[in-house]
Amino acid sequence: MSARVLVVDDIAANVRLLEAKLLIEYYDVITANDGPTALALVAERSPDIVLLDVMMPGMDGFDVCRRIKADPATAHVPVVMVTALSEVSDRVQGLEAGADDFLTQPVNDIALFARIKSLVRLKRATDEWRARETTMLRFAEAGDDRIDVNAPGRIVLAQDENRWSGRILETLAKHGHELIHVSSSTAALAEARKSDPHLVLVDDRVGGEDALRLCSQIRSNEETRHIPILLMIDQGNDRTLVTALELGVNDYLPKPVDRDELVARSRTQVRRKRFEDGLRAKFQQSVAAAVTDSLTGLYNRRYLDAHFEAMSSRLAQAGKMLSLVALDIDHFKVINDTHGHAAGDEVLKTLAERILANLRGLDSAVRHGGEEFVILMPDSPLASASAAAERLRVAVAAEPIKIGAPAGAVSVTVSIGVASATAGMVSLEDLISRADAALYEAKRSGRNCVMRGIENEPDEAPRPIAATR
Image (cartoon, rainbow, N blue to C red; front, side, top):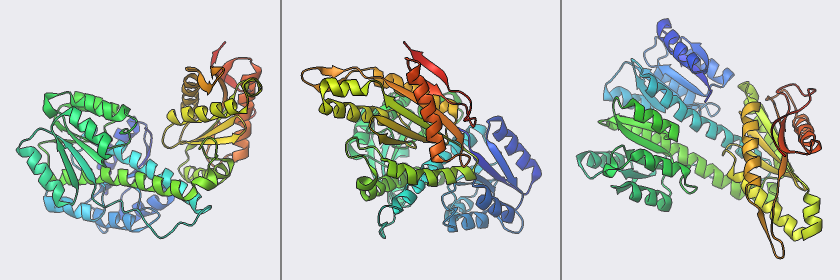
């Protein structure tokens, strides 16, 4: 996961060390050696996360953090305080200043990258829903209600009954969280499906079972896959930790658990879930009728026009890529003529369901007209978008679509074209035109395939990435 990271420290050696670690992992790094410069860069360069030293002359890290969080334009940017201070009072002061997290020097690399990945996921989800809310305001009254992302949440604790679980429950209860304590993986999964918590807090030895399997089940289950997971794990157990992060665990707590760290990390994940849930509900309620296709439930062209403008502007500030996938049902007229319009409608509705099941939460699927669909993929270069398109093509063709008697079902394939550009460099019409050119090249080839254009080169001929005779 690439991201733009702002490193702020008045000691040049510390900046160089963090910068080197981040560059090795292909992060885009910008640096500042004082508070005013940091604030200017946050406003001008739109970083995905700020790693902020506490002890700086003049304007210290606490003050910088307060100013970032006080500005509505930057309040959503995650701030991680990097400090040599270990006193509880210092951590509390950081949290009160609005910090999303903190790391103690010398910084552990696994901890560093785990925090970055977790908070960047939160930032990107926030960015996308902010863009969607901007789109919403163009079609509907916003109302005066606001989402309180800092409100306490519902937390499932999956841990054996012992003195540690008692302390965790006591600590979180003091912060107003609703707590559900279970002592087995089976019970944890069942509770997650039933109560839709804001966080599942998992001990790595819950019930003597494989906690990683529980994490995997939460991530793979449709009802629970968006619930944040916070894993409690023994210090030094790096192999298990790496596997956990690959499975989609959002963050971790080293054992024995520090109470302030427990509060901070739980708060970050609860905030993330509340924000996504609240904006999603608000967005859907406000604009569903105005910007969705009545047959498929996907967005319509009106939404695409407005959302593209907001999304492209946001991504352009960070120099990020934007991809568009154009998808068309092969031989749709034959299906309509042979089986009737009702069968055609069933094909369109089922195809929409399969598209949604194979997209990221950040992507926007649009019925562009007739049997043609468009998928807008923010922060997605051509290779990633093409790979996603190929997975979708295979998923659509994998199983016949039920259309009722007398045929019962019909096999459906799609042709797909993909185009990508650096956000801000092309208009929506240009991007659609390039994706359509690749799409119709796929159709002319006589093969059920994906064709992709060349990144930022609209005049070069499309070429296939996969084909099935």
